[in-house]
Image 1 (tube, protein in one colour):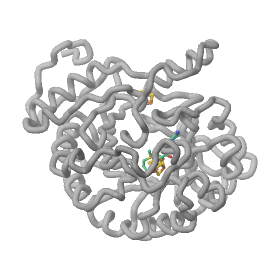
Image 2 (tube, protein in one colour):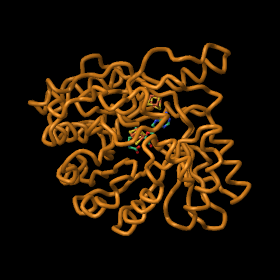
Image 3 (cartoon, helix red, strand yellow):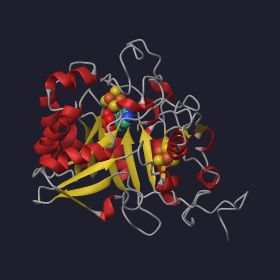
Length: 362
Ligand code: SAM
Ligand code: SF4
Ligand code: SF4
């Protein structure tokens, strides 16, 4: 059966699903589940304080999916091919009793019996206190966002004067309790924190922590993006390579559904990754689906509208068939289209207002 072209696929019985691919042949393997849209930081590139004041109308807790509903949804996605679930937000560690959700998700297995990998993306502010209980609940891996080692720059960027030492301590505790791998995401902005590229690389070499440099993206809800503020992966890599020579892994391209191009330090200092969302979009290999904390599914980080999954949560078979149908109709490749447009001299501006990052979680 050609599942790509079938307009009305027959619902597969739960537990017996075939892999699900979209219109561009991309499988569904990676679920990003936002558990809360609130955050204790106001990063200038994500939730600038001016646009997200303390009385901002975040989702009320009554609108958030319960842990049981999230588990139901995750089960359906896993039957369709998802083998990695990333918990995100807003700041996911603000969600009360998150460990109880992780326990539920950590029990999931793929149709061929493999454990589903459970990952978390966090700003690290609460990680030192929670790393042990998260690990005990079944969390495998953690990614911590950290944009600078310089406290002044970090505090300006996080918008709430949060000190860098506390995030570094959270990272140490995460490693000590055995979360693996531990990664650090740095969003690089020209003239803001590009001075921190080499210091961060130097700091995390030989520690086992994988630093990943992310190109500053024009995400929904901020409106102040400009291509001139982007430091390309190529430029970041050249800066690091000049100080600490690098060798490409996997030909310097993202390996199978990953977002980062991976490099290793020639002297054995570990690994560093580059996420080139703007300069070299990886839509062709994008196997990620996102669900907001109120149960809207987004087929692209830059989608304008979500698909409300809440009406389908009562029947596993119906939910699975709805997910399958939407994924099979997916043709999104926003960053590629936009990059091509900019290269052809077209207007690089947004094509439409997109969902805010804090709702879908990056
Ligand atoms: N609060 C958590 C954190 O900061 O890790 C999880 C949610 S945050 C939205 C997820 C990721 O999105 C973070 O690594 C953050 O750096 C990234 N991000 C947010 N805004 C971005 C932007 N404009 N460009 C690139 N990455 C961005
Ligand atoms: Fe919060 Fe993460 Fe966005 Fe920063 S990047 S404002 S920590 S959600
Ligand atoms: Fe995937 Fe959309 Fe990002 Fe392309 S722009 S990589 S399709 S989320």
